[in-house]
Image (cartoon, rainbow over all chains, first blue to last red; front, side):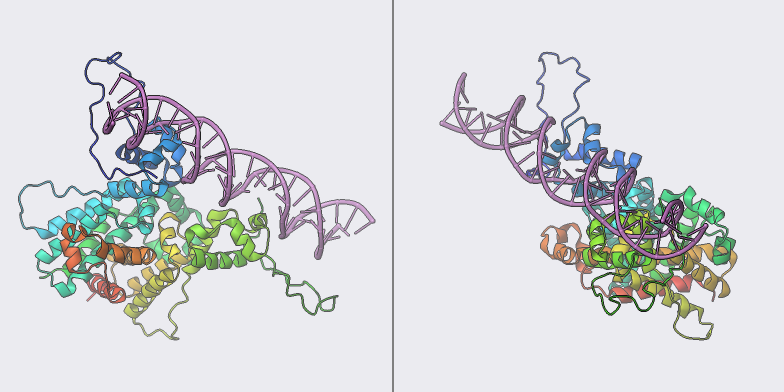
Length: 231
Length: 231
DNA sequence: GATTGACTCGTACACCGTACGATAAAATCG
DNA sequence: CGATTTTATCGTACGGTGTACGAGTCAATC
């Protein structure tokens, strides 16, 4: 079993000053920890994609045996859970005070959400099947709080929250899956000869091609905010 | 290799009238085909979830050997692709003529989309990582065509299409993943003692609890349509 | 009747997550 | 201080996976 340490502090009392060969041993890796495992897992996921994450490969990167990981994490699923939640951490608006600009705050948080997931495309495919981690909940909480403080009535609050939420999730998931296929999809729009006949409007609007994704995202978000927020 | 038959007709000339034991053999299954494989795969996915689909198990249900499937489908991924696309087929509005009510047409298609995916919750987790199948493209095409015919300017068309699209995808994916966790999540909202302290607004609005999901979905969709459509 | 192609499937292999228990090292205790 | 427990590492092995391969069957064709 193990994984007892909830999130204990890690005493750094090792190698107390003068011991033999204290000068340099570039050989040995730092000790394992859930944090290091998750960080390395994210690197591996970024490099090799969702299917590229294997416990043995992760252990290789960490310079340890495969089974050593299981002392720190329960199983592979938990590694994925932790990696997803870590990627979704939000540090908030950089500015200092509170300029009361709730709309800027919300837009920033949602655009950061989208940007964070697009930086790690595997996270989009993970999101639909994982539970809500603390960082996801924190963003939802911020969204709720800000909207409520901006004057959205309690009766309309859940509609507003979920509408914004859905929009961002959908935009991210859609965009990320396009990133994955990428040329395959762009190729598909061009290659298939029958495609223009079956889907003429899509072809005419070049819907799948050279889109200004960021601009489109922002415009739709504005429409939603206009309709949901007071005034 | 194989999988040569693109979608050929299947000659049904077997058992030409009078042959021995033509009366009844309830033993033998109908012959394998991509259609039967996909249909059975959907049954299995509905019953056992995404992780429950194994090629051997699928073959068992079909009364065949595991390797026989590979004559008809390239690999397991393709089975998932086909299952997803089949679930997303759209039959259109039941009514006959064209009452010109573009808004009803769009709402119907999008609500049907959502309903179809919620009927098969595994499809939501599949969607983010699969390419666009023909039935998905057909829905996108219908959406484009209807909006365009309703008078949405070409310059605004892509924004409108993607905004609606994103919203529906997000709503479906979010809702489906809640269905999967279900009691675990409802339990989470109640169980965790610190949850109310960390996320007070979420708790107060009962955001994750007893939501009128269908109503919320429809309201957000209306906001979006109001903002995107002419007039 | 011989040949060819469409199909079925048993066996085998590489690879996966991880249970289990043997180790070693550090911390704690008598 | 030695003895014992706790913490951490990891080699081996097991059950299960997708599927490559090739040997089979059987109907259609020449």
